[in-house]
Amino acid sequence: MRFRHWRLYGERGLAGARVAVWLWNETLTIEYETAALAQYRVAFEADGQRVREVAEPRFYATGYASPQPFLAPLEEVAWLAAQRLIPYRSCRRRNGGQPQLPLFAMAEDADAVG
Image (cartoon, rainbow, N blue to C red; front, side, top):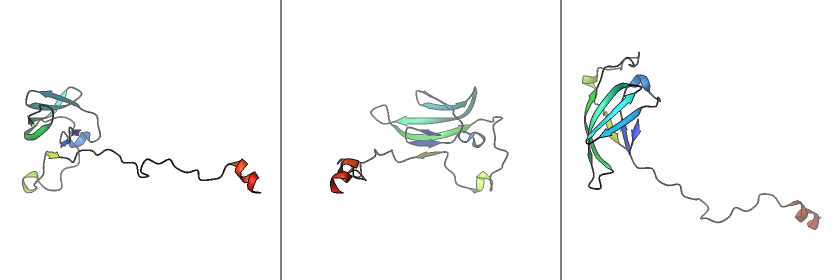
C-alpha cells in the first residue's frame, strides 16, 4: 500500500485490496476488514505531518496469505518492508498555456475560399 510517500507491506495475498490505516502516536497499523496485517513505528518531521522514518515492522499471521511461496527463503533475500517514494509532481501544461488552434477550418471559411 502507499501512504504519505511511503510504500508499506501488508500481506501479499491482499495485493490491490483496500485496507485501513490507523495512525496513533508513533504507531502505524495496517488492517484488512478486522484483522491487523502489519504494524510499523513511524517518526515524523518537525512539522508533525510528514513521515520522516518508518521502522520496526511487525507482521501478523492471517488467513490472507498468498498460496504462492516466495522464490527464495526470506533469510536469503534482502527485501524492504517500507520504502520511501518520490513525491508526486504536479502535471505541467506542454503548450505553455496557449490555446490550441483548431485542427480543421470551419465550414464558413471553406465557402469563402471556394
